[in-house]
Amino acid sequence: MAVELFAGNLTTFELEDSMAREMEDALNDLIGPLPAAPQKMVDDRRALFIAIARGVINHLQDRQDAFVIPYNTGSGTDTTTPDIQVRT
Image 1: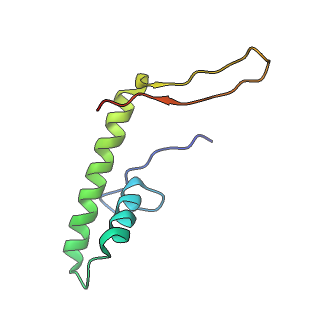
Image 2: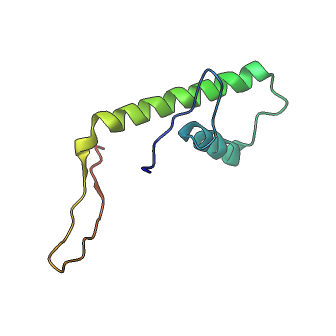
């Protein structure tokens, strides 16, 4: 089974194994969780993470040709090395 990118689900706030969860965890690591925040504030922050994750995933999906995977079959053994093109 192929690995799938998952932004998160805004309707159910499903974040398990999602890009939004990684963003929330990273922010919590940097500045800590929201202290005793109302659920609306937590939900709004999670909605922002899900929106950003959707944008990132859509951007990557729309530009799949930017990912170039060279491989060498000269020795009979395939090797895969990612060559990710990044615009700065």
